[in-house]
Length: 75
Image (cartoon, rainbow, N blue to C red):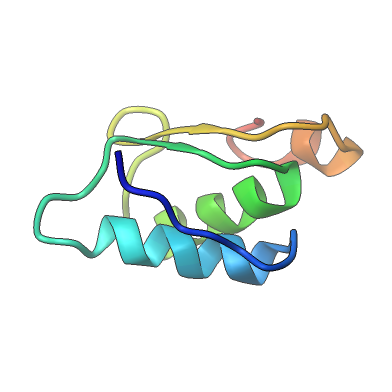
């Protein structure tokens, strides 16, 4: 199971981690982020890379921040 360690919980690092996994030769189909802020970054990277969430990629975040409910798709 691949792991990407982030020093802080912010969307920029979530986006960086997602790019690492989604641009790999064998891209992942699910990302479990340890915070919603990281997961929001994952969603941003998926949009930019034209990876459909949830058809091609499942994304899960933790801590249920308000922004998670307003993201598209919502977390």
